[in-house]
Length: 355
Image (cartoon, rainbow, N blue to C red; front, side, top):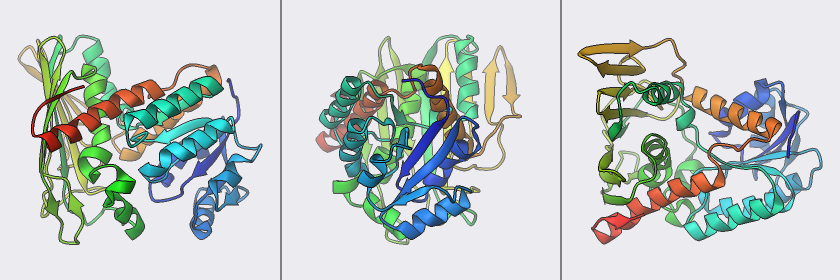
């Protein structure tokens, strides 16, 4: 399937949808033609805010999928709804961008992948962190040999508080606390997908995972699956870890979630640091490289979290127009899901598990 002017329908117009909409609104090869939400008023507000007042508004996703005017469906709903809506979109012949994590378990993920393959429709699992400009810069440096062969990766995810963060609707917080809808905790399973995707992006698929996942209740009653420490073993004697820490009194400057993300990748010849993600602690260089006794800082790149959504969506639009594979493909999304589920299983069992 090759498309030139891509007509987009968005299913789910909650808080995150505004970041997904940016590139569709601004890219000359795409347009938003339909919005679906059980709250039609919310869908109408989004249509107005995004400058697409002509978009068809639907309460039921089946109404949107029946529209001949829609080529691509962006699915932004709670995790337990991913599989049924994705399968319906595939059956309707729509290209598909499915929010992460793609499904609640590997069997469901495989069912969606197989259905898309049989129907021959383009299918992307939406992941934005690997399209964050500092991450892309670090990846290009590593691919050029800047740190030699990568040996280890350390990822730090640090939620806190923020005077500048966006407000999180009560309904969005509620379903993330219900594991029957969310599939796991908000930090290690849901947001953790971004971090496991980063580990996969830089190091490949892990062979073994060992996780300790705690629990902390925030002042507002929201329960975080933190502190947590997840260790990874990669092929060829390479390792990594993800540390998740909720710091209730840590002030974070952000326009989005009250959270900071940091990555350190060590190689045979040097070290790369990636700073900032959802937000920032101070004003460090987005990317720093230490090699041959000298530190080099790289700046002058986009660092707003929204930039990662823009570049991820832009990549998919290009893939649809040229017939090239998207990133993450369904198969790649399933690899990251394996990573994520292995951490959950390890914490339950109290031992390392193989992937």
